[in-house]
Structures are given as C-alpha cells and as structure tokens.
Image (cartoon, rainbow, N blue to C red; front, side, top):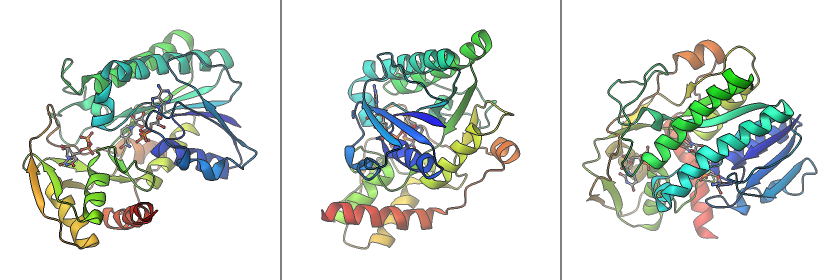
Amino acid sequence: MRILVTGGAGFLGSHLCERLLDEGNEVICLDNFYTGFKRNIAHLLPNPNFELMRHDVIDPFKVEVDQIYNLACPASPPHYQHNPIKTTKTSVMGAINSLGLAKRVKARVFQASTSEVYGDPRVHPQPEAYWGNVNPIGIRSCYDEGKRVAETLFFDYHRQNGVDIRIVRIFNTYGPRMNPDDGRVVSNFIVQALRGQDITIYGEGTQTRSFCYVDDLIEGFVRLMDQDKVTGPINIGNPGEFTMLELAEKVLAKVGGKSKLTFHPLPGDDPKQRQPDITLAKQHLDWQPTVSLDEGLDKTIAYFRELLQK
Ligand code: NAD
Ligand code: UDP
C-alpha cells in the first residue's frame, strides 16, 4: 500500500513510518517540522519506499494513497500553548484536509485523537462512552477542543460522505525520539536526572497518568487501521497508573545521581487523574500493552543518555 503519515517526523510519527516501511509499504511523510526533527527520520531517507514532503496540514495536499494517518499536531502542553490559535487550526484544518483527500481518493483515514478529549475526568478509568469534562476557554482548550472538533469532523465525513474512518484516543505515550525539550513529564524527569538537575514536580505530584511505551501504541494503531469491524474511537494506552512523585522516584532510582525533587505551581486545568479503560481494544483488536513502565523507562533512559552525549 501507499500510505501518507502527517506529522511523520515527530515522536510517534517516526515510529509509525518505520513500522509501515518494515511491512513493505510505501510511506509519504508530511511534516512542517514545527515540533518534529529530521534526525527522527534521517535513517529512513535512503529507503526508496520513503518520501518526505515539507508541508503544513493547514494547506490542502494532494497525493494518491490507500491510507492516511493524521498525526500532525504539537502534543506537549508548552508546545501546543506556544501558539494556541495555530494549534486549533492544525487540528481542525488538518482534519478537514485529511478527510477531503480521503474522500477524493477513497483512502481509509486515521485520526490521532487523545485522552485530553476527556478533560479533567469525573469518571475513572475513562471508557470511550464518557463524554468528558473539558474547559472550552482554558489554556489547554486549543488542544482539547481542536481534537474534539477533529473527531466530530471525522464522524460527519463518515456519516455524510461515507469516508472510511478510524479514530484512536491516545493516552500518555513515551519512548525513544521524544523531544528532550518539549516539556512532557517523562522526558523532563529523565533529562533532568541525567544532567544532575533538580526534578520539577508540578503541584504536589499526586496527580496521576498512565504511561504507554511507544511500540505498544504503534501496534494498536496498525491493528485498528487494518481491520474492518470498528471505526473507534478506541482508547489505546497502558492502564498502569502512577503519581508524578512515583514516576520521579522510579526515574531517580534508575538514573542515580544527586537530583532533588523541587515543587512548582501546577499549570492551569491540569487533569488530576487519567487511566484508560481498554476493554474495547482488548475485545475488538485483541490488543493490550506488553511493555512495563520499568522496561520502557530503561529503553528511554538509554536513548536520552546517548542523545545527551552527542
Ligand atoms: P510530536 O510533537 O513529536 O509530533 C507531531 C508532529 O507533527 C511533529 O513532527 C510536527 O512537526 C508535526 N506538525 C505539527 N504541526 C504541523 C502542521 N501544521 N503541519 C504539518 N506538520 C505539523 O508529538 P507526538 O507525541 O508524536 O504526537 C503525534 C500525535 O499524537 C499528535 O497528533 C498528538 O496530538 C497525538 N497524541 C500524542 C500523545 C503522546 O503521548 N505522545 C498523546 C495523545 C495524543
Ligand atoms: N509534570 C510535572 N513536571 C514536569 C512536567 C510535567 O510534574 O516537568 C506533570 C504535569 O503537570 C502533568 C503530568 O506531569 O500533571 C503529565 O504532564 P505531560 O505534559 O507529560 O502530559 P499531559 O499533562 O498532557 O498529560
């Protein structure tokens, strides 16, 4: 198949491009390098089945493809809040342009949605049937509401135009090729520990997240895309739930060194708890995570250790 991956030079996109190439597909990676890096895909450039397009998803694109994975969007809170209007435009126009292309060339189209559609959830763990608790006017809204509108557009193109859609709601994912400076908690804590800097806990560190290793996530993506029974939205994430204090202690125990925990104000609208209910993924995709946080952190620490030495 020929497959378009928007946001293909990002953390998740680069792993997805790699996986799709390994399966013998042709891959077109579309990216404007807003938060992605050439180094994430440099090893794929010599592959004759790989093509790179520098382009912004806000502007329409035309390529003949069988499948589209729409991942283009900054994902870390500091990055998506840096230019919030652009973030909403990227989600909304990127969805419209991906769906428009899918409609024209009759491709199956996949949306990288997010657990952020549940906002600061009042139902725990979060099943797909939960409609969420999202502030429409807060500092996270550009991302949360942008992703919610994208889901709406996917379902309206599906109902109105018969577009073949798949939607995954991704819960916090980590692994090699995360941007060391994008401010997400796993990369922050590891990089701080490796540099011997203090660990920055926001709030009291009692808020929780559930961390999925990237290889597990990509397996879930491909399973959803390559089956004909369900459109989603479907949660993909690791139900193992940890407080930020527990995460910091784990990272410190693994990296060693002299870093101390320091406490900083909690950013606005920061969700207090998050854990995926993955019943549907188990039932429809026969999917569940296989990599423990300990194992995944070891691999991620090894990646950052090497990156920081360069
Ligand atoms: P990332 O920032 O590493 O990757 C995003 C990629 O999209 C980058 O390469 C960036 O340059 C590109 N991009 C951004 N705006 C663009 C635009 N206007 N036009 C073209 N390209 C653009 O983030 P990631 O973690 O790889 O996230 C990928 C997708 O998965 C995003 O849509 C994100 O919202 C979603 N997601 C990720 C997580 C996670 O934990 N990693 C969780 C939920 C959802
Ligand atoms: N966080 C933290 N220290 C950091 C970065 C993040 O304590 O240096 C917290 C943040 O407030 C949030 C959690 O870790 O409660 C996860 O943050 P991240 O930005 O990784 O993801 P998201 O909030 O989008 O789930």
